[in-house]
Image (cartoon, rainbow, N blue to C red; front, top):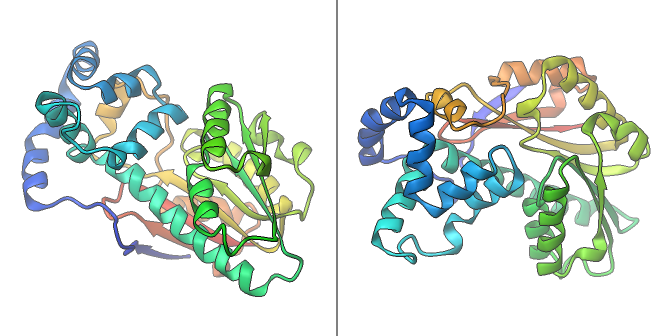
Length: 294
C-alpha cells in the first residue's frame, strides 16, 4: 500500500527552536513520577486540566482541536505560556490536529468526487467512535451551497453518551442536527446497526488506537460490508513515538501503537485491496491515516 508523508497546507511541524526545547523537555516529562506529572499538568493550564479530567475522550480531543479558535495569550501571559507549551511543544496535540486536517482534506476530495459523479443526489456517511464528528460537520458546512438539494445523512455510532452530546451540540451549532442520527453502541455491532452496501463514506479516526488486532479486523470486515462498491473508508492509528511514556503517565487508556505496514496488513486481512488504498503519515509522524476504497 502506498505510504507517504502528508503535504497539505496548514499542517503543523516543529521548527529548530521547538526541536531544541523538546530535546530537553520530553525526556523530563517521560521520567517524572506519574502523580507529580499529573499534578503539574493540572496546575499549569486550564486546557491541561480538561484533558486530564477527560483522558481518552472526545472532550479531550476537542480541547486540542480548539487551540486556534482563540489567541494564545487571550487568558493572560502565564496561562498563555502554559498553553503554548502543551499545544506546541508536545507533539501529540499538534499531531492530533494534523490528523484532523488530513481527514478533512480527503473527505473534501470524496465529496467533490461524489458531486461530480453520483446521480442519485444522496450521500450517506458513517462515523464510528467519531466523538463530535467535527471533521464531517466542518466539511459539510464548507460545501453546503454545492450540496443544496442533496439528501445528506450521517450516522454516528459511539459508546460514550458524553461524546454523543458533544456531537449534538456541534451539529446544532452548524444547523445540521436533522442530518445526524446518533447511536449509543459499540463498534463491533456495526453489522446489526447499518445495512450492507448502504454507506458512501466511513470514518473511524481515533478509535482504532484502542483495539487489538483481532478486534480491529472484526470491525474492518463489518465496515467493508456496509460500504457501497467504491465507497471510501478512512481510519487512523497512533504510531510508536517518543512521548509514549508521558502519555501513559497522564492516565490515557491503553493504546495499540502501529506503523503503516501494520495498519496495511490489518486492512488487507479484512478484505480490502492494497491497490485501492494509501497510508498518509502526518508530518510529526505520530499518527497515520489510511484512505482506502472498497
